[in-house]
Amino acid sequence: MSGLAVRFRELWDEIAPVGRDAGSGGYLRYALTAPELRLREWFRAQADLRGMPVSEDGNGNLFAWWGDPDTDGRAGSGAVLTGSHFDSVPHGGAYDGPLGIVSALLAVDELRAAGVTPVRPVVVAAFVEEEGARFGVPCLGSRLLTGEIDADRAAGLRDAAGVSFAEALGHRPAGADPALLGRFAAFVELHVEQGRALVDADAPVAVGSAIWPHGRWRFELRGEGNHAGTTRMGDRRDPMLTFAFTVLAANKEARLRDAHATVGRVSVEPNATNAVPSTVTGWLDARAAAPETLDGLVEAVRAKAAERARRDGTELTVTRESATPLVTFDGGLADRLTELLAAPVLPTGAGHDAGVLAAHLPTAMLFVRNPTGVSHSPAESATDDDCAAGVVALARVLEELACH
Ligand SMILES: [Zn+2]
Image (cartoon, rainbow, N blue to C red; front, side):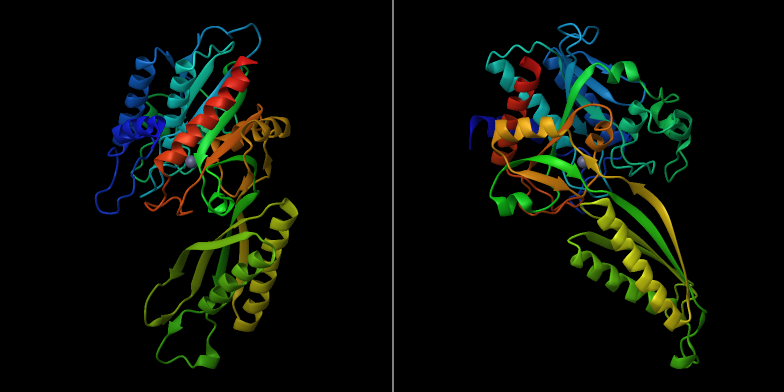
């Protein structure tokens, strides 16, 4: 193991126990709850150790500055922003989010050890509520900073216990800060890969090209609730049959298009073992490389579900609950990083703060190999050597962007 991999492990071990559930081995690091607040304190202490002053944007996002937070470095040149998030999904993995922050701190160390003096500030960010696991809106911190969500709406979002985001934050969020955003020349988020493409490519690090367009659709199927023992099979109007067919159709249509379709949530009325259900509601999560592929996929699933509903005597209503358009990362920046790192290029089906910021400043992502390919689960992993390779890659990128 390299010295850097050892340094990575030492720093990683400082946060590894925080918020870990002993039962599942996964993490419960919801935004602004005790474990995440401890990680934010740890972040401030790490920044302090490095002589990096920390600023807040009034939305819960933290920024540690290598450089003066009150000036732009060389006039007008803008700071280089990196970092990620500390919060997790329920029983999530260790790497999704924190890897980008820990790697950024170590990249600063690497550059300093090499005697690199940036001509523009390097800023390490910890964004709040990226997963949306507590208040329901993913990338809440970056959406507030960029003005993509209204501050009043964000303030009123409530968690499962009824606590509002404003209460958790301690004040009403400040909302859009174009002046702060305008001080950043670029954003580079390093993230653990949430798939197996780098395992197949036999490479530790990749450069992100795009975030697939994606969305959620609610399929509501209504039939007739009835007795499981006395209702003849031919007399039933069973929405579970339509639902089952819809799930299989979604899987098939996605495979035909090299897209992704998932039904991971279902609600059944009355949800009784001895009753033909009256209503079945399923949520389709669909993602594809191109918007027209996504549209075609959802339309095909809807058509097949409707056709099946006619045969089952059930009624179908499809409602789009959310949609996120295709995000293409800055082409020039991605090309520059790909050449610099000689790394493969990967699209991703997952949303990130980088996807929100990409609409506002040149943005890039680096992915670090995840041997299991599993994410949002305790099985998510990365080797110390690959994490060290990620730090080296990020340090090279920061040097390239902050010194030229
Ligand atoms: Zn993440």
